[in-house]
Image (tube, helix red, strand yellow):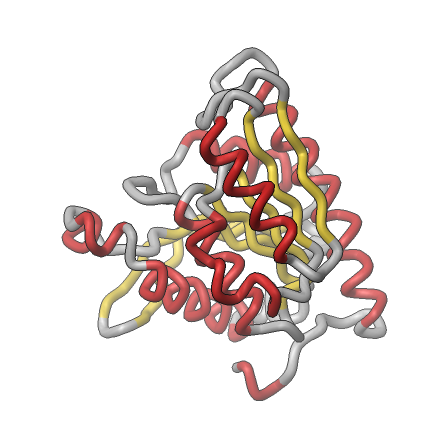
Length: 225
């Protein structure tokens, strides 16, 4: 794991970049409100992805000062802009520039992941949302082209309802994985492990397809640098 700094909007956002040998893709994590690159749940998922040969970037979408303001935490436009800046940074790095790209978003970060995917239809190869506030990306759901998976706890009733509704708005390849009896944080025995396994399988399949569709390279337009 490498400690990295991503310049954006006149600030520097710290992150953790892990690139396994012969990585088959890169997944950028968009954390939810009040969370960070230190999120134990996202770090666990990232470890599983790394074990499956996928590179990961976990970074703070907000500075410490910004994170103290509730308005910043729920500013999805700002979160999306930061995620796209991180995407551009990944595309500028020799080890990740050619890897097919996926987004893993949780809570409000899932809305940023969907918005970023909609903004970069030729770049995003897959999206996975964990307990996501996908309703906050409602305006762009029909513009998402990347294969998208929603993972929601069966006992997370309000979020599950929002995800079911958002799923009907998506026109891309899509699926909904409901983890029986799980709450919003997937704290029950085996629940987070299930999330990580399902997410890894989705990314492996869809990012491999994206690589093959691009003729062995990444599916990315030079103008997005």
